Each structure stands twice: as C-alpha cells, then as structure tokens.
Length: 92
Image 1 (cartoon, rainbow, N blue to C red):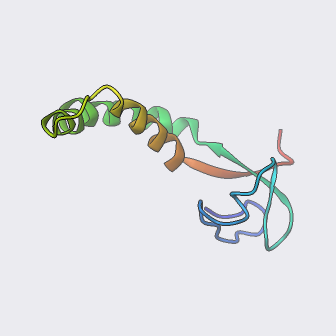
Image 2: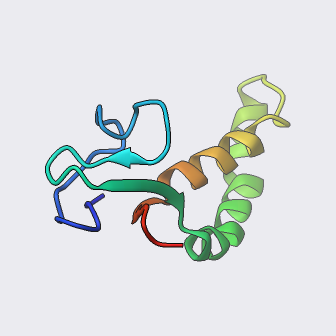
C-alpha cells in the first residue's frame, strides 16, 4: 500500500498502520491516513471466493476431519483484510 499523499510504501503489518487510534499518521510525510476496505473489489471477489470455498476448501477441511462451518468466516475476514487500501483522512 502507498500513502495517498507522498506515495511512501507502507506494509499492512507496519508499525505506523498498527497503532491504536484512527486516523493513522504516515511516518514519512506525517499526514493523516486511514485504512478502508475496497468495497468494489470485495463485491467482485465475493462470487469467486464463494465458489472456491464450496468446491475446494470446505471439502478439504471436511476430509481433514474438521467442521467446515467456520471456514467461510475465515475466508470473509481474509478477503476484507487483503482488500484494504489507504485513503486520506481529510477526505469525507
């Protein structure tokens, strides 16, 4: 991810993005930024993730001897986390 102000590359696991409080502050330009999920990308990925879940992951989990009911929650959380993007905190 890149800062919307200075284009500094920031990792999702960086110290600046994992501090408590909102909005976050870019370590380079010190301007306010916030993490938001990319709703369009989540909507686009919903059907492929669901199909992958039904036909691939859930059967593998059941074959391994576990309940397949909690796997959909893990998929949903991963989809949202992996589609996060940085926006300026000044934008409405």
